[in-house]
Length: 317
Image (tube, rainbow, N blue to C red; front, side, top):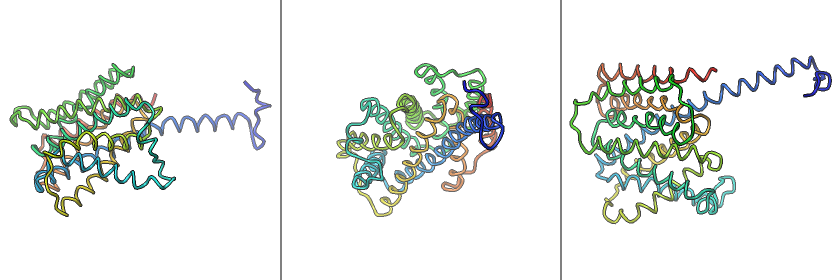
């Protein structure tokens, strides 16, 4: 290590320069998880808004869940191909067709496509709050998968925070208040697929950016669902097309925010913050579908936030 004299700053005490450097590093260390949390919160909001628009497309315009998923992927893929001539876009045929660790990237993309289709089914059959609440079994699965597959250490504080958040989710859903049906099965299936997607994305963070993720999801979804569209296709009105375009824009932004957040923090550490989407779901139910959240929903939301904060106490260490 260089002596204080050799490392001295021409404008002041060498120790002062070192202190500034250490303070800067500490600030960067603390700001990184805060940015990751902000990205996860933002992605949760965008996802709920996007799925609510998907619910409108299925219920009011007669589209199928597979058609909504296919159109979203096809629109993103078409837009990406249009940007190929622009060098500043970062998009190339090589990046699209021959990405690093292609099989792993496409496995992650497949998991997300399956999750999206199942989630749209659940949202179309249940209130937004209920579908969202069941979908938020994902953080519990993610905390377990993060420890199992990524070697992330989930402390008892994180598990406690996740458990509190899960209790809040159960308080909102209140098992037995609604019959078990296809919507519930679809929501839980979407949660499992979504957890696998997030784990795979964490394994790819050194080689795949948010753009890579969006491109592969668009490509895989378009290819996989092109055949089934011969059976599940429904005619599109201009209104449905406009809502579909808006939904695609919102969910693509949600995907980019989620991928960026996961690259900046541990999966199990960020998991409880994804429960925040449940609060957005209650708000959307009230605004878009005239469903006022009950006292149980409000109390459950408080538990969800409390669990998320508790699980983050380790950040300060």
